[in-house]
Length: 139
Ligand code: FEO
Image (tube, rainbow, N blue to C red; front, side, top):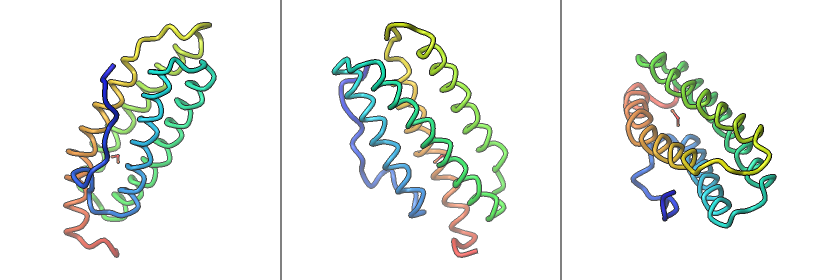
């Protein structure tokens, strides 16, 4: 498990206000998971946190895909596949945890999640935002 929480900063901003807001909330949730794992909180708490993150990601991806479609983003399919890939992997991890009577899972899910989210925001989302903004956000 990584030692530090993710510190939100301007470098995460992609320039689309509602998506930036959601990214910030998602990162806060991942930090919450980090704390709960570090404190060895009750399994029920960790499961709730994992569920919250899943719901948050689903809602965020739906909004972002709507924005991409509205602006006829050229790499929509590729970007959507990245979203689906994370949700699939995340669901598998969640099922493993839910089927485990004790919280014996490693913290690799947290590391994977952190790495993926940061890479995705800093690369794919930024690329998308630049192209969407070039077309005009008010469309
Ligand atoms: Fe902000 Fe493509 O997820």
